[in-house]
Image (cartoon, rainbow, N blue to C red; front, side, top):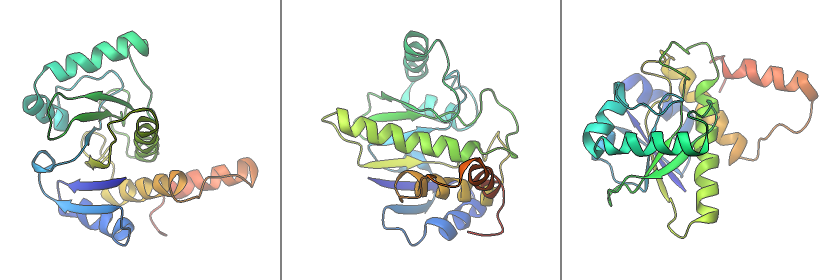
Length: 199
């Protein structure tokens, strides 16, 4: 599975370059995510699936407002109306060029989440959802288009977002899952997610 990380500003572009630049499965792009081709596009939405603000508003205008209605229906039917940060669900877009949408909330409702680990949780959820999809579906997700997570409405600095996404990648696909050290190791890991001093 390959990820195209599409930055809307140079701070995010260079932060991603720092953490993902040497990884073959990641392509860092400075541009418009809606002009890129892929099997799935990430919506860094709110927990309730409303797509009427920020980047999600652009998605709604591009893919059609029925996409929000479809997402909201799935949330109501299967998840009691909302999914928490760290979970992600995949629905079809109806558009052949980008057939799937990965809805991965970075916040429950629009708010400042700059001092949280929400980008880590969201990206971990995205990877896990895509892996699960590929195990169950004959139509695989090979390329994922992903914008910054929590860097818009969430106000998370680009460097923090990039580091958290990188650590999520290491946890799920890089064999760095926490297995030892008990709660102290988990606390240390949590603090590292909020700190940009070391890669």
